[in-house]
Amino acid sequence: MRGRRFRPLLTLGPVISRIDLRGSVSDPRDLLPRAEFDVEAALETVRPICEDVRHRGVAALIEITERFDGVKLESTRVSEERITAALETLDPKVRAALEESIRRARLVHREQRRTDHTTEVVPGGTVTERWVPVDRVGLYVPGGLAVYPSSVVMNVVPAQEAGVPGIAVSSPPQKEFGGSVHPTILAACALLGVTEVYAAGGAQAVAMFAYGTEECRPVNLVTGPGNIYVAAAKRLLKGRIGIDAEAGPTEIAILADDSASPRDVAADLISQAEHDPMAASVLVTDSPALAAAVEAELETQVANTKHRERVTTALAGRQSGIVLVDDLEQGLEVVNAYAAEHLEIQTRDARAVAARIRNAGAVFIGPYAPVSLGDYAAGSNHVLPTGGCACHSSGLSVQSFLRGIHVVDYSREALADVAAHVVNLAEAEDLPGHGDAIRARFDWTVPNS
Image (cartoon, rainbow, N blue to C red; front, top):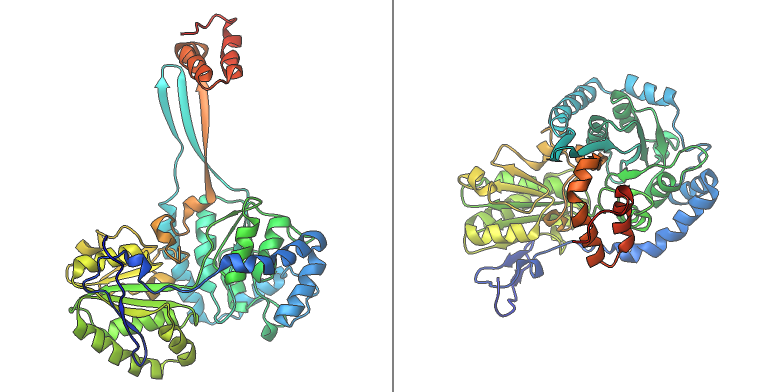
């Protein structure tokens, strides 16, 4: 979109704001609501924490955990006996749900595994792309306002399907459970066969994975969502470790027309808002009637939801809103610009509309594919890019844990066939040593042209 800068009409509703983009010719990215998540500002907070863990290991983790979590640990490593006991005492209904979530996730992620491929470039000259899993990963499972056994599934399953030989899980210690990891998290680990679990949260957990301690060997890659301090530690330590992403607050966008159910739309907006006061819930619609009906539904449903205070804060925040557009075409432009973590399409011919989405972490089609299905049991992964990063990044998958290695195999004849080109390119780049490495193999007989 080009033209003069458009100033959207912002209307403060009783539950959620309205942003009127009808008639706008400006770039939607400058006009849409977005949570403030300043990772750069948090770097100086996490730097001394990470350095402390680097130099003092477990002693630092114990002191930091007592300071931030109010519990004093004797060890960060959770015993296998405790992990096993957590599964034995798990509610059978929760166990059945987790087992089904694992089954479906395996079906999807197993299909993502890449196979090696060899290309014969010339007779006697091949390039093979081998896909090799990282040796060891640290999987972070958040544990702040909610308990996330589903995040254990979403992190562990793709790592296992990729063939990662070493998997460690870390989650914040819980005062309610004597400083151990929440038992439902431990039970999920047990179901997946993960026995290496640590009671560590925040930036200090990322530092533990990056530098290693007396109890935890360092890892190659850290994945999983967390708060701003987890994101900042990932940024700080990236390079020493690989990371999946700097996850920000969760977000949902819904593109809907007047065929959508106001009750369903409101419920889905609330479902993400209950994660965090900074969660973003955005409805994009060309129907003022639907917007009004959703506002009415939100008033009723928010009043009756368990985490009313948290939801109210998220919906009323500057990161959430109902965005009015001229038509579905503008709506598509808006949601593609927003690049939501989760995007629902609740329109007529929703599949065709969804096919035109270029930027989203995951797309949910129609009235019977709510985001909450993807959070738990669709088979898809719920560790997804946030903050508009879906325009260049993907969610967690088997590929996240694999590295492509090119294996070059050339015979003497195949090298001779291309030797002159290599020498000429080396001289064009003023790197004569590259050309000499070719000449040496042919007694300096390779011509210069």
